[in-house]
Amino acid sequence: MGMKTALPAAELGLYSLVLSGALAYAGRGLLEASQDGAHRKAFRESVRPGWEYIGRKMDVADFEWVMWFTSFRNVIIFALSGHVLFAKLCTMVAPQLRSWMYAVYGALAVMGTMGPWYLLLLLGHCVGLYVASLLGQPWLCLGLGLASLASFKMDPLISWQSGFVTGTFDLQEVLFHGGSSFTVLRCTSFALESCAHPDRHYSLADLLKYNFYLPFFFFGPIMTFDRFHAQVSQVEPVRREGELWHIRAQAGLSVVAIMAVDIFFHFFYILTIPSDLKFANRLPDSALAGLAYSNLVYDWVKAAVLFGVVNTVACLDHLDPPQPPKCITALYVFAETHFDRGINDWLCKYVYNHIGGEHSAVIPELAATVATFAITTLWLGPCDIVYLWSFLNCFGLNFELWVQKLAEWGPLARIEASLSVQMSRRVRALFGAMNFWAIIMYNLVSLNSLEFTELVARRLLLTGFPQTTLSVLFVTYCGVQLVKERERTLALEEEQKQDKEKPE
Image 1 (spheres, rainbow, N blue to C red):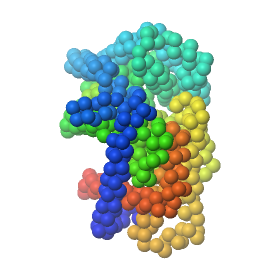
Image 2 (image 1 turned 45 degrees about the vertical axis):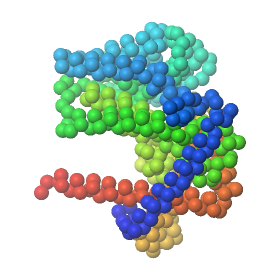
Image 3 (image 1 turned 135 degrees about the horizontal axis):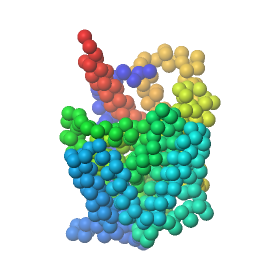
């Protein structure tokens, strides 16, 4: 209710002013804290020399990000450039063989990076799930897929299988887990699609072409087999009007994002400060709230950059890959919260939607979310923090439905009906603001640490009550209203576009 209703321009202007001022104030506090803590002994390991000519150090606490753009940068560029070059040549000379080229090049790249025994290990998992698909039993395919995934997440099988990797290097563990886990999900998707469409007679070759597509192999995103097979099987793919311009813009945006993160880490040590709780506890409340928020924004940017680079290559190959996740700033409902759209699509198609149906009934929704987060826990690797993260987000998703059902209850529904549509939007935005911080706190547990999450919760809800609590809530409310206004505008533009496309 109220989604299509605009608020007065003056009110939206006030919200923009409040939000901009609050972000600037919190940013100033974080900048001062980063400058003050640059030479602390506790920061020595993760704050290293950066732009020495202006005396700026750099936050290097994120091991993966640093490795991607330092020691492994040239390897990544070389591998993806080779893929693009051979794909272009194959498309020009023998377009009907381009899917084979993707598989052969990907398999050779995997073998060159991880060794031949690792390649044989993954081929064994592929063959196992292919054989299961021939039996036509979806429950068997899903069960075997989860068992294969568990073998890469739990000892002693994980230790045994990691021994198949040849040599040692910095990103070995990351590449091992990424390549193995995504392989299992892709093979499971293939098996389930084979069971759903036995008339299509998918072959083992189709599975290998799907699994060893290099841009998606180690880090995703994952496309379900039906989508990938339909797109890669086009003998003479045709680009849409303006598609190349969009690809160039996406590549440029990824480069700009990488440069922006590099600049940001020279001034704001948002990943290092939370590791020193004594120092973090001395931050002003506004800076501490900004620190918690910026940690989630960075994780989104990291995912957006990774998927942006990979998706650019995939688009050059005439694929339509899953888009980067929705920005955390625009999230105020748990139902839209995910940091990997490909895995989210996979879970929704094969688990969540299959069990939950229309997601309007309480009990089926509870069963669907429990099953989904159980598999997500296995995907992330079972441990105490992951258990807690899964429980909190599973609860948040169900709690939203409970509140929605409560709002539809007779007395409350009549109260909302008595309000104007603008006031109804304001009330819902207030609940959205509280939900926004629940999303931040629930995900901060896994993205940072439980101790830091406890510190933020205590400062914002207990020691800072009521001034800090209400101030942060009001600023967040302003942000939610601006997001709702953006959603309203996009919805109206989409309706107008559909009206123009309708025949007279």
